[in-house]
Image (tube, rainbow, N blue to C red):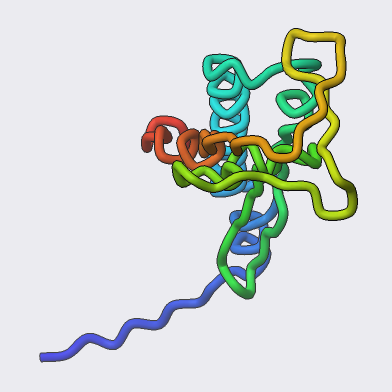
Amino acid sequence: MSVRVRASIDEAKLAEWFGPGGPPANGLMKAAGRARDTSKAIITQEGRIDTGQMRNAITSELVETGIFRKRVVARVTAWAEHAKYQHEGTAWNGMGYIRPVRAKVLRFKPKGSGKYVFATKVKGVKGIKFLKRAVDQLTPYDFV
């Protein structure tokens, strides 16, 4: 015995489902917002704050929704120039140093100091992977 089944897809409903206001997009934006807020908290906990510029430059946004690809994409981004170095670290392998490229010495203000320091080399900083750690902490409940 066999049964013949016909199904039709309502393209308008499908577009509504995968659109910017649909359930997948709403859930993903909730999770992206949670990852954004967790990243900011990690930066604060790790003491990587001077002016707060990097923490305040972390954003979350809905990047893509689409019926044809049937996917929804969100992005959490740290826009500050130095965020990459705080996330990934710089020359941190126990013996790596940061050295000047176009000058004889490096000039910088250490955290908590108002005076400049001049050095021919400095140890790098260990990366704290704040974005990766925030995403790793997401649970299924963060999408609801």
